[in-house]
Length: 132
Image (cartoon, rainbow, N blue to C red):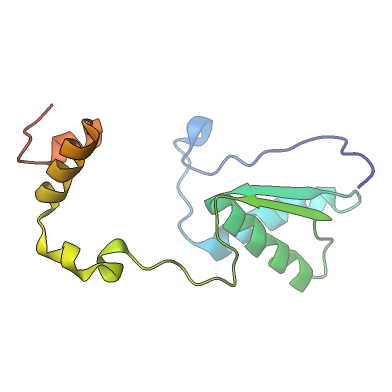
């Protein structure tokens, strides 16, 4: 890519100014909707940047574009997401079975004692600490 002439961002349904738009909770539907939007950009080079869930969507969209015989991005940048071929990390309770012996409130209290802070969202759901 010699030069990037413009930048376009994706604003997912149900977010920010699209708050009232129905959510898409299916990867195939999301990819199909984005692929349809990309038909206008097939005559120029483009790149994808995806962060977290956006990285997974960009990855699947690239696969779908190639499968459909459409132009794919020349460059792809992904952040905050494991590579697609890497198995996801199992939950903490699977790695450390002993943690299952503790109640959620005990884990939160231990965190509070160690770090002297507790996020507001934890305080409101922890009966031992009471509401904020």
